[in-house]
Length: 133
Image 1 (cartoon, rainbow, N blue to C red):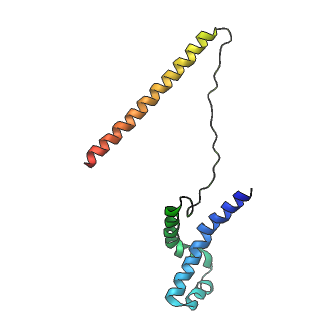
Image 2 (image 1 turned 60 degrees about the horizontal axis):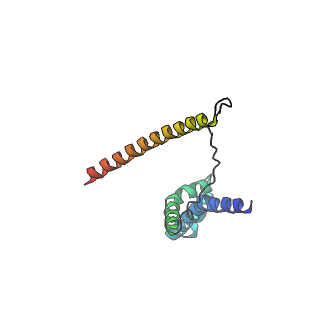
Image 3 (image 1 turned 180 degrees about the vertical axis):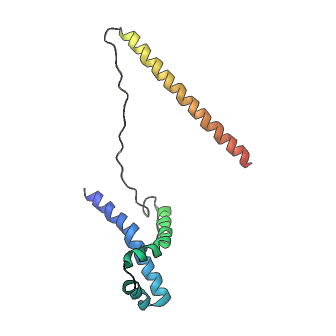
């Protein structure tokens, strides 16, 4: 649980705080403290304005952090994945050898489909490489 809260904090820092901070630094560099204060006095939503101003610079910083260590600048978000499995019904009336033959035929058919798919992928990759030459 502590790891999730740390990841949430890091994500919030990278997505929200970093762009605002970089926009404030850029404003201070260009116009001094008065330019920074201007964002808060002349805008109805200063944080969103600053976030949008600093997003390009923040993206650049996040990308450079990812070059150092993948996931450092653009934190990986956890996702829930579910897998549906086909139910296999085995007839209890047939012998084990017949059941095994049916299962092996089903596996062979799926492997054939997989081989066809991989061959199609390889041929399209080869074709694109030949075009690049």
